[in-house]
Image 1 (cartoon, rainbow, N blue to C red):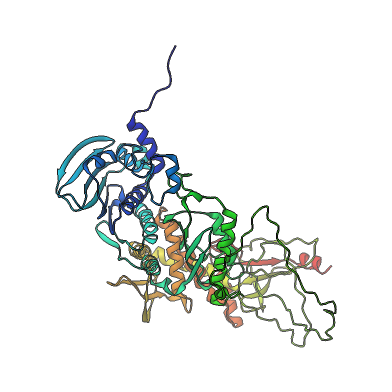
Image 2: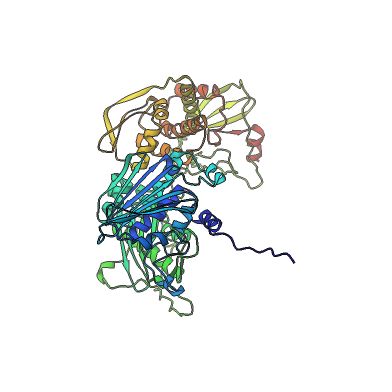
Length: 622
């Protein structure tokens, strides 16, 4: 009989655990920073090199460890936090499973120096790949110093799949921010390749958010505070006017621990319903305080997913609390929450019968009593933002003497252009060399022209301008001939440190696109020049979109990255094209469009024009 089951050696078990707990340098930084917070530190310094792949150093001034504890700390499941399963549900600290240090030591070269404040001498320990190498008595400052070198040196497959140093450094910065945001009473320092990225002093919660995110968010924060028996929630939410399409300023913490919750995220969004565009996201920094036995943090190796006992009730509390904060701003109707400071927000619970509210009805009310009604001119709805994307209907046109088409405000809505349930919409590309005849202006944004035998083309001015700008930017990039318009009064931008570092790293790309940037000693970025084609378009919005694109495409090739940046600039630069234009200008725009390599679709794939054939017109007019 052959025995097949074997007990794994500790080194192998630790490497398997490392695959769950430590999957990149940022994971190691997170674990070491949380250990430093648990140690009661008032100052924590993180220094990384090469994106943390070759060097991670975390120094704190916490309680330190005795020689015996220092040695046991690297054993798997060695912990000072729990002694029984019940202790897990009464914890206010971070690491408690005793896997982090053992996992890190199994895939890296680790050196630890530690000393308790009451002791004159400390302890130094060196471990490499789970192999204990040395322990000796040394002189060192009070607290603990960890040095992690050559992460995944003995796991080549894992090391090969690590990203570039800049990408890994960005992940480290993200983890650093999360720990720093929920511990404003601690001083934090982050250095990347010996360059200081963050130097955070102890501060209030609002000040710490401004320190981490940037000065630009200071006027965007609205206080949020609710304290009831079930949960206490405090923090800040962003003004609706500052919502962004890709917002990374969204943080939730419970009992000092960062966590992710798509469910609670929807509660926040529900409070912003109809206050922000559908494709944007608000900022929020929410800090939950709840009894530890009512949550389970042990459902995921990284502890970013947390289970709550009463999620539905907390969902309602979050939505109500956010609406209260927005109500104080005056953007939504609200009750006077200050009239009774002890009020508790009611939550829906199963098994409880609630009385329906009484509604007063006026039996004499007649909605048809008014004799006068307002009839507004509808005209052709003036937004052809998604030309040809779906079946459309023609809005009713009120007769008038001048048959004047109304100009509409620009947004992302779609014009209902052609009516008829049985009708279908034809959309096709224009053949090269086609001649357009005549110009008919529909609005500031749209105009029509006839072409061929009885065909009508409706052109989106903004998207046509976007195609033209994109080809201009690509030509400038190819010839290195960008034109920069110097600003009479340079603008200073207060950016978060990661965005500033990203802008400095890709300064050459920004320069090729026509931006003149300067980096000031106070941490701000000076915008001295912008691309000449931008006109009155907000350069701040364009830079923000470019930074988002860069952060999402760091691992792409440079030529692909530049094309994406050119597409963003073309889209933003074209927004100012919707203005009253003379026929000659429209004719020139149409000629420039037809000379583009791709004139049927924008760089993002949206149609530039809508084609209606004579047969289609006959069909619509029956």
